[in-house]
Length: 381
Ligand SMILES: Cc1ncc(COP(=O)(O)O)c(C=O)c1O
Image 1: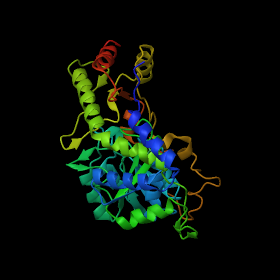
Image 2 (image 1 turned 135 degrees about the vertical axis):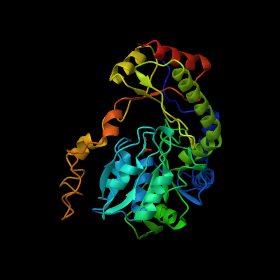
Image 3 (image 1 turned 30 degrees about the horizontal axis):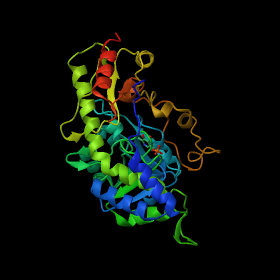
């Protein structure tokens, strides 16, 4: 079976973890501090706070900005659910926007239509390793005094107009889950040029403590541990090399597919001002048979991604409007009326959800594997 994603880890990561175990210092030590400094440098921001997941990173970003009950946060409707749960975790209200059919990321034109007096923030997701149109999004944010939290969970090293994502919005949130461009097993991190927010995030992630026994904020235990950070430091040193190979493989696959057109898929258009890092090597299936394509490939020992198969507003959590028992945040906001998720129809999301697959493109693939992915796919129909 050619796997769609594998972590690229080995002896160096083992040695780094071994050193932590033998040191007996598992929490809040030099590895976390070094990881934060190196990752901030890599992204091009002044500070970073490491966390135990990307979901925690997003939640902390919301909390540090003071997003609260009844605030509206504009999110894309095609993404992983964590983008949205981070909004609910603050009792705020997700407002879904459509995507741009060319890059599959949130559409600035549709964001603008959804801005109200309650809007506080936008979370663009750099989906599949691509980049949302950050110029247009930052212009909207400035015009309407909104904060922008970039969800970079799928975009480590992606660039928009020459800048790394995670350095363009007010805050950036990353995930180091096992299948990402780089991993810490589980893990996450927040980036920003605003050191005050990062300092606050470091307190909230650690029980809201300012000292060992002084709790000033509503906190959580969202800390990254030393073993994860030790792996992260090794992985970060390899990230650019892994990204270059990931990009090379993805471009080779997509160019070969483009040169052998079929009436049942389209190859994505790539923007000139974006360095796409291909978390997914995305292919749009246009014959309505994505499920069949996925299972036929699997029968032929090629694993592919097939996720976000319906717009998020169709998920039970959203439709039922009851993320917490008692229906909060909706029932807790006295004059709350907006967001009729049942009636919502975002045409581009509806057309694309369920029809995207991600082909194997990880750096451990051999040329023979790549050939087999392309040939197997082209021979399907
Ligand atoms: C777009 C997006 N946001 C957030 C997350 C959450 O990250 P984590 O799984 O580390 O909590 C993911 C994870 O896969 C993601 O893909």
